Image 1 (tube, one colour):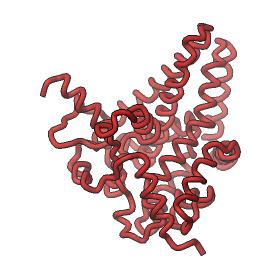
Image 2 (cartoon, helix red, strand yellow; image 1 turned 90 degrees about the vertical axis):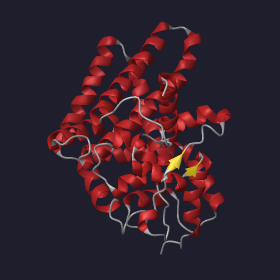
Image 3 (cartoon, helix red, strand yellow; image 1 turned 135 degrees about the vertical axis):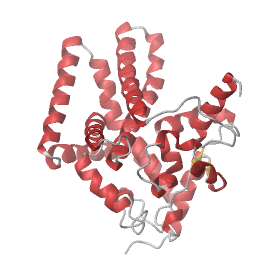
Image 4 (cartoon, one colour; image 1 turned 180 degrees about the horizontal axis):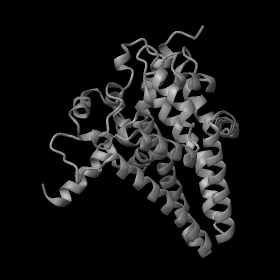
Amino acid sequence: MHPLSRVIASFKTYVRGIALPGEKPLFIVTPLMVVAATALTLVFDLAATQLIWSSQRAWLYPLFVPLLALGQSAFWYLYMEEHHAVHGAISKRKWLNELIAEITSIVSFAPPPSSYRPKHLLAHHDPQRLANSGDPDYLWLQRLGFIPGQPIEQYWLLLWRLLINPAFYLNNLTNRVRGHIFQAPIGHRVTLLVWWAALLAVAGAWKLWAALLMYVILLSLAGPISSLLQTLTEHVWASTEDPRTKTHPRLLPIDSYPHLVLIFLYWRMAILSSDLAQHQAHHYKPINRNWPMIAYSNQARSDLPHAVWGIKNQFRVSFNSLSKAPPSP
């Protein structure tokens, strides 16, 4: 295959989240490469934000919008790296998995590994609890108002109301502060306080307040948006189907709808990352240290006929299953 064709094919594979027959990767990506790339992306994003603000050139200010999207992508990758580290899927070394889980949790303010590990490994990955009332992810959606048995239109209305409701972001931030400061182990709390002290000290010494503000916006606004949208479309919630079918792969039809390319790219970059587009494969094999390349695996290609095409259709699948499920007792 011509080098340019391989570049284009690799890009299209990334956007879809799945490889079509004959598509090959440009190079092999390892989990540690993803961790390093995420760190560099976040540093670049914050540095570019500071430079544009310091330039005091108003014509550059529109660049804050793509920088916000890039930062949201970096934050979401940090969430996913904690997820894989908790599974032991970053490295064969247990201590390295634990270290990465702690660092990504602190930097992104995701749930501390000490509380995330039992909820995710023991509850979410239990086939009998997955996507029903025994799943902590589903219980979170219920607390937000996504109660089974309602009309589909009600779920759409609730989604839009949440996205513009300041209370949603404030409650999310409050719960995370509670988890990190009052519920995590003492070592985690000390490390978190040292991290924030270092951020404030560096921002004060070098006048990096614009970068720090972007970081806070990503933490308090962009992170919760990604978490809500991804969680809603992750599973066939409250479905009575076989547990093995409660996760549906997602493909984004960039080839079919080129006029929506920016929306699709934003969704793929900031909402769905790494193997989440092939989440069913993850439930079959949670400890898979080849997850950065899972789009090219046989499992990914075998899911192609069962894919849900389009962002709106992903919500329809989840909302339809919620609507048909019996109301909670």
